[in-house]
Image (cartoon, rainbow, N blue to C red; front, side):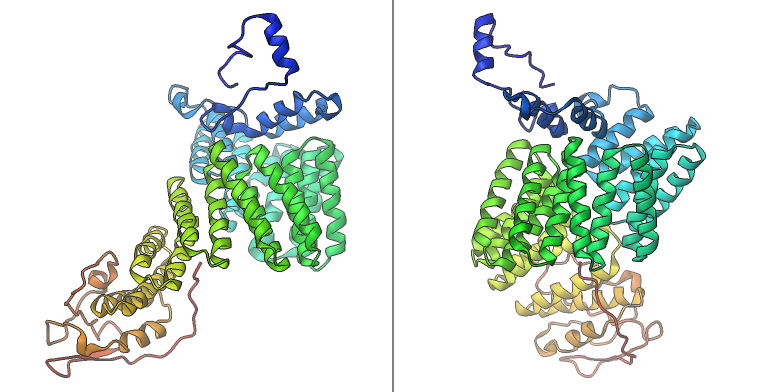
Length: 524
């Protein structure tokens, strides 16, 4: 699996036996094919234990291999393979496991198209279920619900009880997040649990118990949640499902945190982090690290959290787990900021943002960029903050999140005011107003900031108002950086509910007739 023969550097039998007794084991690095399936590597290492009592049972091995995405050709070889639906489905599975949700979803889309051409109902149902999982992890809850519903109908028609249970499980998860309908979500989860128990499917049992325990904690049933989650840990442990153990421990840590049991919460969280490192579960590692940070904040011990996060950075960097590394750097930046170590915090956050961009995790990169801009502002480095706000603007625009885009244009305008670059600030405020008007958002704050600009120091060239199509507003192009932009383009009073009049050759006054609307910007 590493591409090398066992002990290939040694040919003599006696030398090989000596190495075996010395417990010299093969190593894997971030460039090896096996780094795509670190849980397999973890299983092999446990099978090599000298003490037989520490080795997994055959049932544990079967569980691990069954649960993992199938090993597939590396990217270097994949183009030479026939683009079969099964291969694409497995590639999608593997990329989603690694946290590459966009790439994984693209593989699944292609696999679904091929299955539909072949009229393969079972393949279609399988991909729909996996698409529901991917959508759920991308916070696309409506899509997750629709995909899970379609998969559920197909699995029922195929009389596939485990497939039906899987689809019902993900439907319950998406309903819980989307509609906050606890009863319907609970009904779906318990139906899945009943089917899994009937088929003695421990992986499904553990996963269902973990979600049910989380739901109980959300409904202020913490003591029930502790019992349910401990059962989930026990079921996952007996079957060798280390991913299931880590999931349950992470939720157990959250429940203890809610109960102010910080010692128990930290212990569960640390165990989940250790497992996440060993099996390469990057998404779980990220969430567990954030939970650990919350716990240590409450208990007033950030030093230990910093040590764990630094170790996480080292491990994820060594193993080529870029999402885990980026997440660890992000958490480290937050810790260092709280400890007023601003320079090192900036370096950690900037590296995190670049890594998120490299792996196309743009939503994460914009959140980190927001933290960097806030840190630069705290240090009084307004110029240093501008490129990070520009990155946020680009991400919000590409994602067509116009409320977030308007908020970031407003934010950049505020930073430019601090730099006394009033001409540019006016452009960004008016850009934010234009986008808010187009999307029926409130623009009271933008108006207030625009009218507060000191017009006497602005360098307007034109004396009379201009009428201009909203779609051609120069203000809507936030990549402008010139320090002396001079073209005022008042909006056409016939198209908007406001009027513009020029009052003198040296300055202009803008009079808006509007009805204030209550609204709030979704910042993140």
